[in-house]
View 1 (cartoon, rainbow, N blue to C red):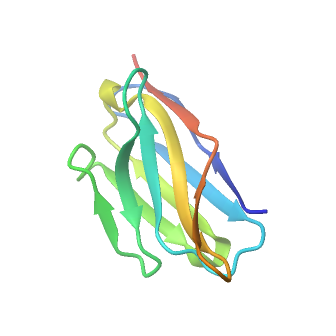
View 2: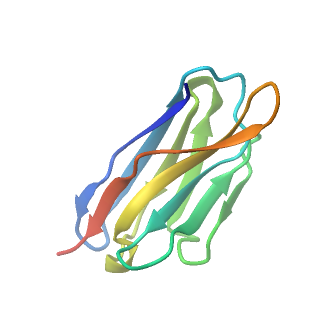
View 3: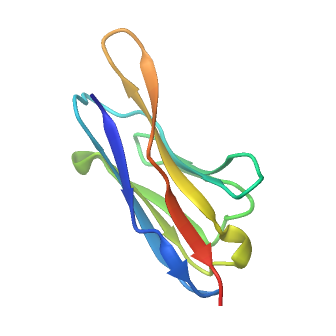
Amino acid sequence: QVQLVESGGGLVQPGGSLRLSCAASGSIFSIYDMGWYRQAPGEARELIATITNGGSPNYADSVKGRFTISRDNAKNTVYLQMNSLKPEDTAVYYCHAEIPNSDYVLDYWGQGTQVTVSS
């Protein structure tokens, strides 16, 4: 059984920083792409950043230049460094991973961590 466990959310003032972590555990041979999504109240879940197994990142325009995604393949962990946070970044943040088994690739999600940007 594979699990993704997130940590690092919380309350921060505008302009502040937070670092999210997401560790995958269980029967894992390898992990393909990993990423972060967020969902604000009343809105659809939004893809904000992805990173390939080789470390190539991609970002949504809304976070480009402020957020940095990284991963440690030895620890099966993905990170999201969030700087210059704005009130509109307030949302529940979810990590995602594509993890293959012997037959196919499955999508796994973390439980979500709340990020609130407010003064």
